[in-house]
Image (spheres, rainbow, N blue to C red):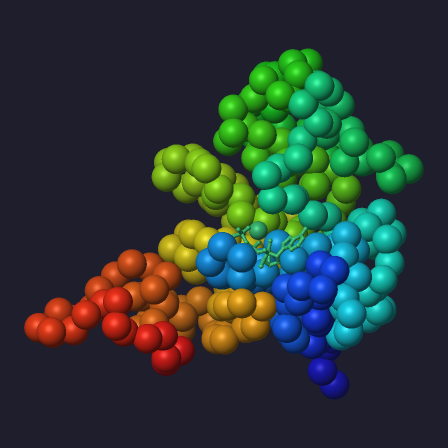
Amino acid sequence: MTVEPLLSVTGIETYYGPIQAIRGVSLEVAAGQIVTVLGANGAGKTTVLRTISGVLNPASGQVRFQGRDIAGLSPDRVMRLGICHVPEGREIFPLLTVRENLMMGAFARRDSEIGRDLHMCHGYFPVLAERASQRAGLLSGGEQQMLAISRALMGRPRLLLLDEPSLGLSPLLISQIFDIIRRINREQGVAILLVEQNANIALNTADYGHILEVGRIVMRGTCAELLEKEDIKEFYLGQKTESVRGTHRWRRKKLWR
Ligand SMILES: Nc1ncnc2c1ncn2[C@@H]1O[C@H](COP(=O)(O)OP(=O)(O)OP(=O)(O)O)[C@@H](O)[C@H]1O
Ligand SMILES: [Mg+2]
Protein backbone atom coordinates (compact mmCIF):
# COMPACT_ATOMS: atom_id res chain seq x y z
CA MET A 1 0.00 0.00 0.00
CA THR A 2 1.38 3.41 -0.88
CA VAL A 3 0.63 6.31 1.41
CA GLU A 4 -0.81 9.34 -0.37
CA PRO A 5 1.38 12.43 0.11
CA LEU A 6 0.08 15.32 2.21
CA LEU A 7 -0.10 17.57 -0.87
CA SER A 8 -0.16 16.45 -4.44
CA VAL A 9 -0.36 18.88 -7.34
CA THR A 10 -0.90 17.35 -10.78
CA GLY A 11 -0.62 19.13 -14.11
CA ILE A 12 -1.88 22.52 -12.98
CA GLU A 13 -2.24 25.30 -15.53
CA THR A 14 -2.98 28.79 -14.24
CA TYR A 15 -3.74 32.00 -16.13
CA TYR A 16 -3.94 35.71 -15.39
CA GLY A 17 -6.61 36.63 -17.92
CA PRO A 18 -5.13 35.59 -21.27
CA ILE A 19 -1.59 35.14 -19.86
CA GLN A 20 -0.63 31.58 -19.01
CA ALA A 21 1.73 31.66 -16.02
CA ILE A 22 1.84 27.94 -15.13
CA ARG A 23 2.12 25.31 -17.85
CA GLY A 24 1.45 21.94 -16.29
CA VAL A 25 3.22 21.79 -12.93
CA SER A 26 3.19 18.64 -10.79
CA LEU A 27 4.78 18.23 -7.38
CA GLU A 28 4.26 16.47 -4.07
CA VAL A 29 4.94 17.24 -0.43
CA ALA A 30 4.95 14.39 2.09
CA ALA A 31 3.93 14.96 5.71
CA GLY A 32 6.77 16.59 7.63
CA GLN A 33 8.89 17.20 4.52
CA ILE A 34 10.45 20.46 3.25
CA VAL A 35 10.15 20.84 -0.52
CA THR A 36 11.48 23.79 -2.47
CA VAL A 37 10.64 25.34 -5.84
CA LEU A 38 13.44 27.45 -7.26
CA GLY A 39 13.15 29.84 -10.14
CA ALA A 40 14.10 33.26 -11.47
CA ASN A 41 11.86 36.34 -11.55
CA GLY A 42 8.62 35.62 -13.34
CA ALA A 43 9.13 31.83 -13.43
CA GLY A 44 5.75 31.31 -11.77
CA LYS A 45 6.72 30.49 -8.17
CA THR A 46 4.18 32.80 -6.55
CA THR A 47 1.49 31.60 -8.95
CA VAL A 48 2.10 27.98 -7.89
CA LEU A 49 1.58 28.91 -4.22
CA ARG A 50 -1.47 31.03 -5.00
CA THR A 51 -3.00 28.16 -6.92
CA ILE A 52 -2.48 25.81 -3.96
CA SER A 53 -3.86 28.24 -1.36
CA GLY A 54 -6.97 29.05 -3.39
CA VAL A 55 -6.16 32.67 -4.28
CA LEU A 56 -6.17 31.57 -7.94
CA ASN A 57 -8.11 28.74 -9.56
CA PRO A 58 -6.26 26.52 -12.00
CA ALA A 59 -7.78 26.22 -15.48
CA SER A 60 -6.86 22.54 -15.37
CA GLY A 61 -5.06 20.06 -13.14
CA GLN A 62 -5.59 18.79 -9.62
CA VAL A 63 -4.62 19.98 -6.18
CA ARG A 64 -5.11 17.30 -3.53
CA PHE A 65 -4.52 17.83 0.18
CA GLN A 66 -4.90 15.02 2.71
CA GLY A 67 -6.73 12.98 0.13
CA ARG A 68 -9.29 15.55 -1.00
CA ASP A 69 -9.48 17.74 -4.06
CA ILE A 70 -9.08 21.37 -2.96
CA ALA A 71 -8.69 23.15 -6.32
CA GLY A 72 -11.36 25.83 -6.56
CA LEU A 73 -11.99 26.10 -2.80
CA SER A 74 -11.79 29.61 -1.33
CA PRO A 75 -8.57 30.63 0.48
CA ASP A 76 -10.26 30.58 3.87
CA ARG A 77 -11.58 27.02 3.33
CA VAL A 78 -8.09 25.92 2.29
CA MET A 79 -6.67 27.61 5.39
CA ARG A 80 -9.17 25.86 7.66
CA LEU A 81 -8.12 22.53 6.12
CA GLY A 82 -4.54 23.15 7.26
CA ILE A 83 -2.62 25.10 4.59
CA CYS A 84 -1.31 28.50 5.70
CA HIS A 85 0.32 30.84 3.18
CA VAL A 86 3.07 33.35 4.03
CA PRO A 87 2.71 35.60 1.00
CA GLU A 88 5.32 37.36 -1.07
CA GLY A 89 6.08 40.73 0.54
CA ARG A 90 4.81 39.51 3.97
CA GLU A 91 1.54 41.49 3.84
CA ILE A 92 1.32 42.12 7.55
CA PHE A 93 -1.30 44.60 8.78
CA PRO A 94 0.86 47.66 9.47
CA LEU A 95 -1.65 49.59 11.58
CA LEU A 96 -2.48 46.67 13.86
CA THR A 97 -0.19 45.72 16.73
CA VAL A 98 2.16 42.76 16.51
CA ARG A 99 -0.09 40.78 18.83
CA GLU A 100 -3.24 41.67 16.85
CA ASN A 101 -1.50 40.50 13.68
CA LEU A 102 -0.75 37.17 15.35
CA MET A 103 -4.35 36.82 16.53
CA MET A 104 -5.55 37.44 12.94
CA GLY A 105 -3.76 34.21 12.04
CA ALA A 106 -5.96 32.36 14.55
CA PHE A 107 -9.27 33.94 13.43
CA ALA A 108 -10.75 30.63 12.29
CA ARG A 109 -9.91 28.71 15.47
CA ARG A 110 -12.28 27.87 18.31
CA ASP A 111 -9.96 25.63 20.32
CA SER A 112 -8.36 26.38 23.67
CA GLU A 113 -4.72 26.22 22.56
CA ILE A 114 -4.38 29.65 20.98
CA GLY A 115 -2.48 30.94 24.01
CA ARG A 116 -0.10 28.00 23.87
CA ASP A 117 0.63 28.70 20.19
CA LEU A 118 1.20 32.39 20.88
CA HIS A 119 3.75 31.32 23.46
CA MET A 120 5.33 28.96 20.89
CA CYS A 121 5.71 31.84 18.36
CA HIS A 122 7.25 34.05 21.05
CA GLY A 123 9.67 31.23 21.79
CA TYR A 124 10.83 31.08 18.17
CA PHE A 125 10.89 34.85 17.71
CA PRO A 126 11.29 36.60 21.10
CA VAL A 127 11.21 40.05 19.46
CA LEU A 128 7.50 39.49 18.75
CA ALA A 129 6.86 39.28 22.51
CA GLU A 130 9.05 42.30 23.24
CA ARG A 131 7.18 44.39 20.67
CA ALA A 132 3.73 42.85 21.12
CA SER A 133 1.89 46.13 21.60
CA GLN A 134 3.69 48.14 18.91
CA ARG A 135 2.25 48.71 15.47
CA ALA A 136 3.54 46.03 13.09
CA GLY A 137 4.42 48.66 10.47
CA LEU A 138 7.22 49.83 12.76
CA LEU A 139 9.02 46.47 12.60
CA SER A 140 12.11 45.99 10.41
CA GLY A 141 11.88 43.85 7.27
CA GLY A 142 13.33 40.83 9.06
CA GLU A 143 10.97 41.25 12.01
CA GLN A 144 8.02 41.56 9.63
CA GLN A 145 9.07 38.27 8.03
CA MET A 146 9.15 36.67 11.50
CA LEU A 147 5.68 38.07 12.14
CA ALA A 148 4.34 36.79 8.81
CA ILE A 149 5.66 33.27 9.52
CA SER A 150 4.26 33.37 13.06
CA ARG A 151 0.86 34.65 11.91
CA ALA A 152 0.68 31.63 9.60
CA LEU A 153 1.70 29.30 12.44
CA MET A 154 -1.17 30.68 14.53
CA GLY A 155 -3.50 29.01 12.01
CA ARG A 156 -2.11 25.60 13.12
CA PRO A 157 -1.06 24.46 9.64
CA ARG A 158 -0.04 20.99 8.58
CA LEU A 159 1.50 22.62 5.51
CA LEU A 160 3.14 26.04 5.42
CA LEU A 161 3.59 27.80 2.06
CA LEU A 162 6.55 30.20 2.21
CA ASP A 163 7.02 32.72 -0.61
CA GLU A 164 10.63 33.98 -0.72
CA PRO A 165 11.24 34.50 3.00
CA SER A 166 14.83 35.60 2.23
CA LEU A 167 13.80 38.54 0.05
CA GLY A 168 15.48 41.80 1.01
CA LEU A 169 17.19 40.42 4.14
CA SER A 170 20.88 40.43 5.09
CA PRO A 171 22.80 37.13 4.86
CA LEU A 172 23.00 36.91 8.66
CA LEU A 173 19.26 37.41 9.10
CA ILE A 174 18.53 34.91 6.31
CA SER A 175 20.59 32.29 8.07
CA GLN A 176 18.89 32.99 11.43
CA ILE A 177 15.38 32.85 9.95
CA PHE A 178 16.12 29.65 8.03
CA ASP A 179 17.51 28.00 11.19
CA ILE A 180 14.15 28.70 12.80
CA ILE A 181 12.23 27.48 9.73
CA ARG A 182 14.10 24.16 10.07
CA ARG A 183 13.30 24.02 13.79
CA ILE A 184 9.60 24.73 13.17
CA ASN A 185 9.53 21.90 10.64
CA ARG A 186 11.24 19.47 13.00
CA GLU A 187 9.65 20.44 16.29
CA GLN A 188 6.08 21.14 15.13
CA GLY A 189 5.97 18.49 12.39
CA VAL A 190 4.79 21.10 9.86
CA ALA A 191 5.51 20.30 6.21
CA ILE A 192 6.84 23.25 4.20
CA LEU A 193 6.65 24.21 0.54
CA LEU A 194 9.27 26.91 0.10
CA VAL A 195 9.66 29.00 -3.05
CA GLU A 196 12.91 30.90 -3.38
CA GLN A 197 15.31 32.66 -5.69
CA ASN A 198 18.07 32.10 -3.14
CA ALA A 199 19.06 28.62 -4.31
CA ASN A 200 21.88 28.26 -1.87
CA ILE A 201 19.81 28.63 1.29
CA ALA A 202 16.82 26.75 -0.17
CA LEU A 203 18.83 23.71 -1.30
CA ASN A 204 20.57 23.60 2.04
CA THR A 205 17.24 23.71 3.89
CA ALA A 206 14.87 21.48 1.91
CA ASP A 207 14.79 17.72 1.37
CA TYR A 208 13.61 17.80 -2.24
CA GLY A 209 13.68 20.49 -4.93
CA HIS A 210 12.16 21.50 -8.27
CA ILE A 211 13.49 24.01 -10.79
CA LEU A 212 10.76 26.11 -12.39
CA GLU A 213 11.42 27.99 -15.63
CA VAL A 214 8.74 29.92 -17.49
CA GLY A 215 5.91 27.99 -15.87
CA ARG A 216 7.41 24.51 -16.29
CA ILE A 217 9.44 22.26 -14.03
CA VAL A 218 12.65 21.50 -15.89
CA MET A 219 14.50 19.53 -13.23
CA ARG A 220 13.79 17.89 -9.88
CA GLY A 221 15.61 15.75 -7.36
CA THR A 222 16.79 15.52 -3.79
CA CYS A 223 18.57 18.69 -2.75
CA ALA A 224 21.79 16.71 -2.34
CA GLU A 225 21.51 15.64 -6.02
CA LEU A 226 20.60 19.13 -7.24
CA LEU A 227 23.57 20.69 -5.43
CA GLU A 228 25.85 18.49 -7.58
CA LYS A 229 24.29 19.35 -10.98
CA GLU A 230 26.44 21.45 -13.31
CA ASP A 231 23.59 23.70 -14.47
CA ILE A 232 22.46 24.35 -10.90
CA LYS A 233 26.00 25.21 -9.84
CA GLU A 234 26.51 27.57 -12.74
CA PHE A 235 23.13 29.23 -13.17
CA TYR A 236 21.66 29.08 -9.66
CA LEU A 237 24.62 28.98 -7.29
CA GLY A 238 26.94 31.22 -9.31
CA GLN A 239 29.80 28.71 -9.14
CA LYS A 240 31.95 28.27 -12.21
CA THR A 241 33.38 24.79 -12.16
CA GLU A 242 35.73 24.94 -15.13
CA SER A 243 37.72 27.66 -16.76
CA VAL A 244 38.37 26.38 -20.23
CA ARG A 245 39.93 29.08 -22.34
CA GLY A 246 37.52 30.28 -24.93
CA THR A 247 34.39 29.12 -23.09
CA HIS A 248 32.10 32.11 -23.02
CA ARG A 249 29.70 31.96 -20.13
CA TRP A 250 27.07 33.91 -22.02
CA ARG A 251 27.19 31.34 -24.81
CA ARG A 252 26.67 28.39 -22.53
CA LYS A 253 23.09 27.12 -22.65
CA LYS A 254 21.27 25.42 -19.84
CA LEU A 255 21.03 21.77 -20.78
CA TRP A 256 19.47 20.63 -17.51
CA ARG A 257 22.02 18.00 -16.73
N1 LIG B 1 -1.56 39.85 -11.59
C1 LIG B 1 -0.95 39.47 -12.72
N2 LIG B 1 -1.45 39.79 -13.93
C2 LIG B 1 -0.85 39.39 -15.08
N3 LIG B 1 0.26 38.64 -15.12
C3 LIG B 1 0.82 38.30 -13.96
C4 LIG B 1 0.25 38.68 -12.69
N4 LIG B 1 1.02 38.20 -11.70
C5 LIG B 1 2.02 37.53 -12.31
N5 LIG B 1 1.90 37.59 -13.65
C6 LIG B 1 2.78 36.96 -14.65
O1 LIG B 1 2.82 35.56 -14.41
C7 LIG B 1 4.14 35.05 -14.52
C8 LIG B 1 4.56 34.37 -13.23
O2 LIG B 1 4.58 35.32 -12.19
P1 LIG B 1 4.91 34.95 -10.69
O3 LIG B 1 4.63 36.16 -9.87
O4 LIG B 1 4.23 33.69 -10.31
O5 LIG B 1 6.49 34.67 -10.77
P2 LIG B 1 7.55 34.49 -9.60
O6 LIG B 1 8.36 33.29 -9.96
O7 LIG B 1 6.86 34.48 -8.29
O8 LIG B 1 8.44 35.80 -9.76
P3 LIG B 1 9.21 36.68 -8.65
O9 LIG B 1 10.47 35.95 -8.33
O10 LIG B 1 9.47 37.97 -9.34
O11 LIG B 1 8.31 36.81 -7.46
C9 LIG B 1 5.01 36.24 -14.90
O12 LIG B 1 5.16 36.24 -16.29
C10 LIG B 1 4.21 37.43 -14.45
O13 LIG B 1 4.48 38.56 -15.25
MG1 LIG C 1 7.00 35.67 -6.67
